[in-house]
Amino acid sequence: MAPLTTMSRALARSAVRLPMATTTATTTTAIRAVSSTPALRDAAASSTFESPFRGESRTSKVPDFSKYMAKGSSSSNALFSYFMVGALGAISAAGAKSTIQEFLVNMSASADVLAMAKVEVDLNAIPEGKNVIIKWRGKPVFIRHRTAAEIEEANSVNVASLRDPQSDEERVKKPEWLVMLGVCTHLGCVPIGEAGDFGGWFCPCHGSHYDISGRIRKGPAPLNLEIPQYDFPEEGKLVVG
Image 1 (spheres, rainbow, N blue to C red):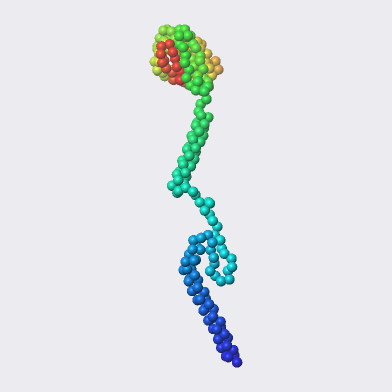
Image 2 (cartoon, rainbow, N blue to C red):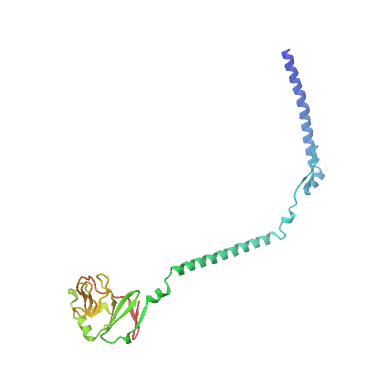
């Protein structure tokens, strides 16, 4: 009985597979035939598509996107895009320039500092044998209108004997005008003019004596009084800085 039962099942399975294969082949042929018909091609060109499969009562509608399409040509759209890119680039460049310019203005020296960078002095207002003290960059500047005797005294000193050897010619541009910073080279005090053992300047803080050329002659100061940058742009005028 067992072999008979097994054979019956095999025959039943073969009978079921044969109609299914026939149906599938028929359906495929039908689909290919329908796909090649002019009616289906016309339906595909329209916005409505009717399903060729049996049992399908509804239709699949493709949305209409025509109102979203650009009205102009592709060249006009590209021109507008280029214009927008160029405009945004120009605005960005202007903003960057303004930012950098404001940063540089904030970092630059203020008007009062620039005003102190150079000081102009009228030499006609300084009589011979007198000192004038001006302020330059927050420091005092001594301007001495020396007499002929003072010039001779400054040149008669043995330079080799000085602590900071400098001749008087190295310290002045015009012999009658001595211009130097009024800051003691010891600890930054302000010396007193027309005082000391050498007729020049004297620092009372620690006892430094400078001669009529501003050179250290006695006391703890290691160097001569510093000579700033200055010039005589015209007769009777001095510019410090």
